[in-house]
Amino acid sequence: MRTPRDQGLFFTVFFSISLALILFVWILLPAHVKIGEEEEGDEAAPKKVLTREDKILQVEAELGRADEILTRLEKTKDKKDEKTLKKPGKKGPEKKVSAKTK
Image (cartoon, rainbow, N blue to C red; front, side):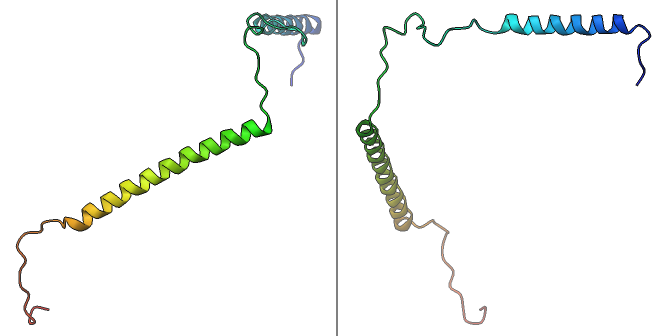
């Protein structure tokens, strides 16, 4: 790698460009909020703490809904199967096949 003839100028330009990029990124970052501070509007909506019992109730309700969906799907599948068994597709007049052609 070649070394520049004026090393002082090279390092000055390099560090000034680096500083400009760092300041540009720093300006784009969001404002810092201290850990203990609350933002406006958070006080109006209290946070709900879930307990184990609440979570169990939610899971049981979800399982109940999933079971209902599965039973409905099975019923529709059974209805489709019954329809296909009752109504065979029309193929036209059947031809009698003699023993010689077999």
